[in-house]
Length: 263
Image 1 (cartoon, rainbow, N blue to C red):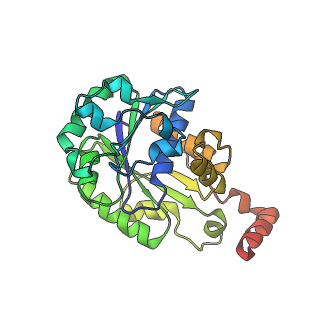
Image 2 (cartoon, one colour):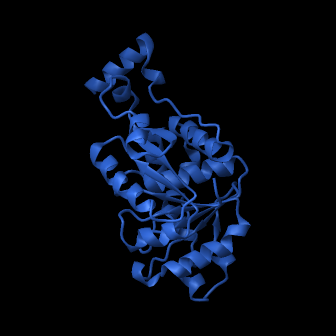
């Protein structure tokens, strides 16, 4: 997979920003020098998910306007080779031109092993700005009909860009529902959308709480193992996919599934 990767979705609410931050942490935990760029101009949340919002003195708009050096606008997450370029919060999205954004990512490309761009939800100008600066795309969806339908619109649009590859992450998969056949199967979603499955992330209260607290680095729940598999797939192409149904198999699994259903 290439150096610059946009993480996008057809709609908001599928956990795209949390996926971007968690995947960045998984790559950095493997020693990969990783930069996260918040492409959601005016509505930046990436620094919040990692607890860095109070450390940002400059942002990408300041860099583009020549008010600071690139290095002054990049924040490092303590303890990791993980860095964040905050979004511009004091300007309108339309003020950040796609050409300027591409020039910025081009300047940064040689300094990092990976650049992950958190794309704005939807298919407006912010989508074009983020995708046009990228080599690869990861589409995030959930196993819900409406989310898959919106993801289908996005993958159709992505076919019009000069990308080297597109892959899928199915987020917030409930293992109990999947084990009972009551939700869309991730590989079936991959078949419907016509792109390979890069990873499956289970529904996980732990990651949601850590994101709200700005401490995703403290997440030790099942989703962390799933994100580590995604990072390994990006780096080695080994293709391991987390199975969220494991804890719902056998006698104990049946008990867990029934308790979950009756909760």
